[in-house]
Image (tube, rainbow, N blue to C red):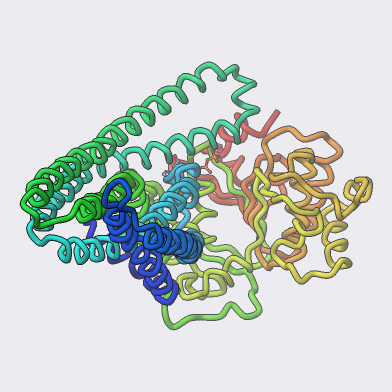
Length: 577
Ligand SMILES: Nc1ncnc2c1ncn2[C@@H]1O[C@H](COP(=O)(O)OP(=O)(O)OP(=O)(O)O)[C@@H](O)[C@H]1O
């Protein structure tokens, strides 16, 4: 599994080979220089033979060399970390971009079925974790290779016997580290998952603060937060507990190696095979030899967290995209707006059938009011027409062309949509209106606003069209927000419309404005209206009455009332006052 992850990560990191080579060169320069220092220190010690037997000239020369080496080595190590952070940042930039691109190609099912906080967490926390792991990984691994190889050679030149002892004991560290890593990986995966869950919850609570406060849900919300937070605490503790074992255990092994060097070295010195300076150099080398291994094991937690996060990112990247357009691709051209559903079946979950064998014919310019109790499938019908979800079987045609043969973007541009929860983004009012047509001129924006009856309220704002909206248009009323979304559709001038009439109460004046704007917008356009107003259903060319995903009745208001069927009951319970 890890091999597979490494290979996939390499696909991204490998693109920056030149930077990695530069890091390696700096690693060689910086670390080789520092490998010389124990040798020089040993030589310096041997210049001090005893009282009055000190070679001062030799000593000063060596100390000067040591200072220069330390300075250069620090410079190269600094350069190494600068370049490796550039390589890590470039890699992360690519992964983040690919992940965000992926979000744009995923079907709506993914967003409906996963907590938004968790998705955000994948793009932020998980990517940061990979970034930290990569940066540390690159610098430590490169330095380790150079130091281990360098120290090994230098130790060999001093004493092959003691070198043998060191290289027998030190690899034990690897076994211990990999054994612990195996266990801690699972804990880190749990930790990342819980971070995602926590983010999801926090996002939900922040987004719904009004509801939280209105229902006095603060205490319960805190309880739930505490519960997730506790789980996160436990997962984090367990992961850290396991990974924190690595460093002390490997240090213990290193200390055993250190003691062995001292004892064997001592015996060899007494026998006259080694000088005191040699032993001093060797001790430092054996320490340096173990250092990169220790350092790598001390960042295992970071590397494990990076692996766990990489798994979550790759899982996102591996999700199935929206289905591509079927060939041959057809062009809607000058779209008229004739719509038909033929034997359409659909369900969100396999085991819960919703729409079964639905047939519907809508002629261009007609206004279709969709009514039905909650959960009857009104929004689902819209989801299918917009291709937010794909039908299980059957066909949906516009002007006789199957929508699965039409480019998804082009299809969506022919249908203007105004929903109840009008989504606005932080930016000016003008930018919000021109969302679907960024190249629109000021005049066009104003025209659209006038048609949407939004111009007069915009004009009264201190900065007019340049008024900056908070995220989600928090500084506007519900009705004003809806007028802006109507203007946004007007500017695109689509041949078809999907409107969701607001159920929330809006002041009468704005309500009248919205209704007027809706009526104007629907002129000559095929319109599907999820209807909540009496006036809409009365004016509709056809009313579709939905129940449990089926069209149970279809016709004009008076006809349906005369039938005294389901619509009659629904009308008296929902619309008639
Ligand atoms: N993303 C989804 N995943 C699973 N089931 C869903 C999803 N969206 C809707 N449903 C289910 O499908 C059924 C139809 O939902 P739909 O939103 O179309 O109803 P509706 O008539 O628009 O309701 P309302 O008037 O309350 O908006 C409901 O039972 C609902 O629970």
